[in-house]
Length: 71
Image (cartoon, rainbow, N blue to C red; front, side, top):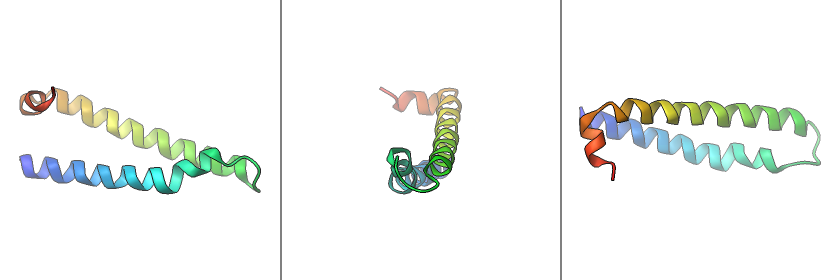
C-alpha cells in the first residue's frame, strides 16, 4: 500500500532528525568525560540507522512503483 510506504518513510525521516539532533553532536565532542563511550555509542546508532536506510533503498529498488518515482 502506497500510503503505508509513505508513512514508513515519514517515520524514518523523523528518526533521521532525531539522529541528527541528538546523536551526531556526540561524534564531535572531544574533551568531555566519558567522551569515548559516548562517541562509540553515537557511532553505533548512526551505523545502524544508515543500515536501515540502505535496506529501505534496496527493497524500494525492487519495487517497480518506487523505481518509477526515482529520477
